[in-house]
Length: 356
Image (cartoon, rainbow, N blue to C red; front, side, top):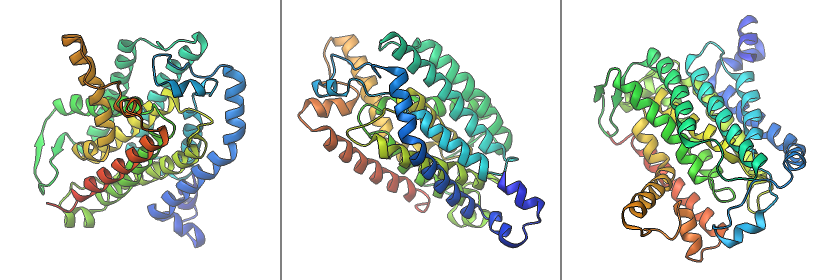
C-alpha cells in the first residue's frame, strides 16, 4: 500500500526511501515484530478463554508434557495477523511471487486452523483426516506452482554448479508441489516442543531473505552464478514479515510456552518456506537450510516404516526430538541444541551461493 502511495507521489522527498526493497523489508520486520508483541497478551488471553482446556496433550508422550495441559493452541493466528499486516503495508501489490507465497501461507493456515479447531472442540488428537489434508495441500500447492512457473519457468537448478539446470517441463510443477507440501508438513512435525519450530523458521527466513535479495538482483546473481529471477527481490518483504512475526511469537512461545503455534502456524510457515524456495529456484538448498525439518520428518517415516514391518522401533519415540527427551535431555536442552543445528545448516545452505 505504501509503495503505491509513494509511486503516486513520484517518490519525491521521504517517499524516495520506499523505492528500496531493503528499506521496506526492514519496515516489514519492525511492523510485524511490534504488532505481534503489542497484541500478543490479549490475543493469548482470548484463545485461553475460548478454548478452555487448550490443546490436548498426549498421555503416551513424555510425562513432562502433562504440565502443559491448558495451554492454548492456534497461536499461529498471531503470527499470521502480524505477517499479513506487514506484507500488505510494504509490498508492491503487483508482484506475482508475493501473492503466490501468500496464497500458500494462508491456504495452509486454513487447513491447519480446521485441524486445530477439530482437535480442541472434540478434545481429540485426530483432527482432520490425513488424506483430506494432503489433498487440500496439494491443490493449493498446485495453484501456487502454476503461478510461479508461469513467471520463472520450469528449470531445476543444481547447487554448487554454476548455470547448470534441468528443464523438467510439466514435471517441475509436480516437483514444486511436493516441495511446498513437504516443507509444510516437515515444519508441522517439528513443532512439538516450546520454541522448537519457531526459531528454526526464523533462521530459515533470514537465510532466504539473503537468497531472494541476491536472486532478484541481476548483478549479484550473475556474479555468484545463481539463477536470476526478476521480481523475486520483492519477497524480502515476506521474509522480513516472517522474521518479525516469528520473533514476536517466540517471545510468548519460549519455554515455558504461554501459547502453542498449532497446525495453524506450522503448516503455514512451512508452506511459505517451500513457496519461497520454488520462487527462487533454490528448492534443493531448502533441504539444506531446513535440514532440521527434514531430519524430523525422516525420523517419523523411518519409525513408521520399520515398526509396520518388524514391530520394532528405531527411536524411543518419534519425531526425533521426543527421542532425546526419552533419553533424559531436558526440553530446553533439546530446543537450544536443535536451534544450533538449524543455524549451522543455514550457514551451510548459504555456502552454496559461493561454492560454484
